[in-house]
Image (tube, rainbow, N blue to C red; front, side, top):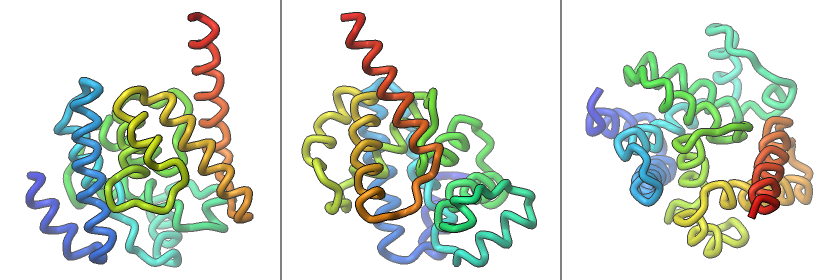
Length: 195
């Protein structure tokens, strides 16, 4: 399916705010892809579809996972909004006819992160956090600047801020996010030790 067709379809399924955010992520992902010599087209598709399953009720999300045998962790059961990434992969394949494994993987890990993320994964994760309509996160100005310079450092900063925020708020923390934070922390320490 062509990008413009997907945009039209998404406009019907997403609320106005989510659609605006989606376009922001798509263009931010494209900019980051240019800055880091990644595939711009892939970045745009990943950005466009990352939240394609976001505006489904939590009850419906759990139903869809059951129907399609999508594994649901204890944290996801308690906070079903996290499932939009996994269901997003299903929708990207079935509704929007995306079969590029890199795009699908980026959508899958865009909320929790994952150890050993590839460049596209990191670009989508970061674009989702820094797109122009976002204004609540701490250190946003610094993170936006860093994103065009060093993806790994940016990942670490976002993960660190996110975990700190969730701990303060008492929100559910997905173990995968903690694992991802440890992975990037170790990776950057190793890089620094080798300098």
